[in-house]
Image (cartoon, rainbow, N blue to C red; front, side):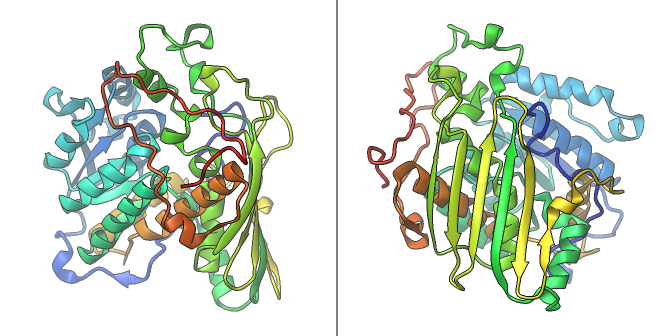
Length: 427
């Protein structure tokens, strides 16, 4: 899904990348010759999943797409049709037949059970922990879109599976594409080489236009189809509801928070925050997420990260960047704004993943690191919603579980009200 001017994944899309971890895969786990064909299956056929298929086919000439799954048949078929417009050299490696198009809440299991080497997870974020856990249990390599969940209970579930994926030496590449972007890797090396000194302060920003799923043709006059039950409506309009998207700070601003955690080498220990909905109307299509959050994260070293995410209804000031201040220098990704760089990082992340799987490059497993960044973002959200100072221990012990207990499309699933500090209860 894209906004009018700053899309969720449309910033810094032209950069060279490389791998981000440094442990070489064990020889006995290398699948074979470097040019061996790998099969990939996609779970989640929305805009991000459809683009991910093109990205992996473009970056990895030895990869074929052989299976697809989505909750909605119309979304799967739309994605399938989009592949017919691929360049011939890519379309020739899209080999999904009618028996490998799976629909429904259990469809992910069928992709995982099919003869695929790589599982690509691109569903709405709430389902990420469940799907990731199943893929790890099946010992599949994984491309895992961010974020890694939307509530503490399920992110901890993801973390448990992440530990197992490390033990199994599975390759896990996240959708945090900055980790495969040369500029960021070069700056990280400068930091590690001592050029920047000790980090004393950071800024993380994602200020842009909103993501409004109900702008699609499925929403005549931008309103809910009266035939839809609560669950279908909320899934089709997923960016408006906390349980399924996590709010902007989790779903979108995670990119910038992840860069700061990556460069710090750890997660914050506490946060205070404020936020609210200034322009989002209190109509059901706009759901129960905030349109702005400002958070002050503190790390164990005493360094602070000032985190600012904002979605303006109309074009206004825009800023998607990170600024890292050290005792000797500054790293500022705002200098990249408008730059035309030679390689798409959304393609490079797949090239890095396949190189890891085949033993052609460093072993990569980003599951735990990006899970910690996801939990960091959730910690900021909960601080803004509650008005409390939230510590890492508090969020790691939180019992918040936002997932529906009944996945019947016609079931009643009322939306909690917009969170109000003082009334909202942190659990």
